[in-house]
Image 1 (cartoon, protein in one colour):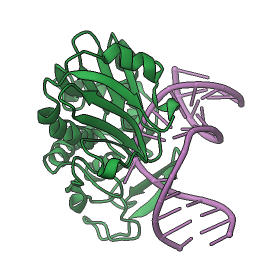
Image 2 (cartoon, helix red, strand yellow):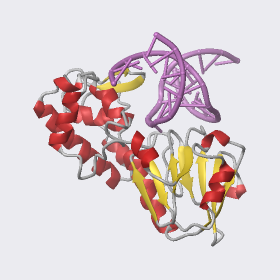
Image 3 (cartoon, helix red, strand yellow):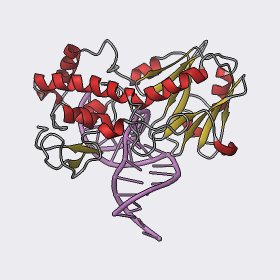
Length: 270
DNA sequence: TGCGATGTTATCAT
DNA sequence: GATGATAACATCGC
């Protein structure tokens, strides 16, 4: 569920809480060992112990803690959450716990256990998987245009490909394509330049708007103490099957494209 | 009761 | 290389 705006929201929430804390250890709960992607939980714990958190930031949908001599990273996948408290010491769904020298903790909670935790000395493993940042200065209209020309994928699966552009997921891709009047199955090198321009603007604008509203909560997304994202009320197509299009009143269609549920208007998205 | 769908992504087969 | 299916898992709703 969490896409770029939700990940950014989590980071902004955690920054003041975690600034300059020193990690004592990483605890491994419920024997969910698949969750630890780079090393065993013991090895990660040994690597991070005694290190102070220098910075909390984001690369695509990865949450990265810069430590003194390495990086601890998290990926929330569908249902992961980073929370600072749990009720009644109830460890259900808690896959890991970072325990700090001030006796506070950060819990990784994930009821589907798709989320991942890893430790690395070098960011190259993440950079290999994650492409251009849509809110970074490298992402310009001419570069976007050029990259789209090089590819022959359908635009929707291409925008979901994190190594092509990072941070977009199913919700925001549908929203961006609706706003720029593009059919999700258009081949990327066939896009008209005016549509590319609109798509570029939509990506940047929608992500910024969603961040300012703390992301979108459909079912699961929460940050901190049960806070939810408020962008849901501004969604124009996502989860609006059979409801009237806000532009042309035609009923929104739902189809599957690359096994992903896709909402669009077949009149104004061509 | 049972089945299919759910916002993600790495991996494997074709 | 591109594309598609699958697995990882729990819950909800029809």
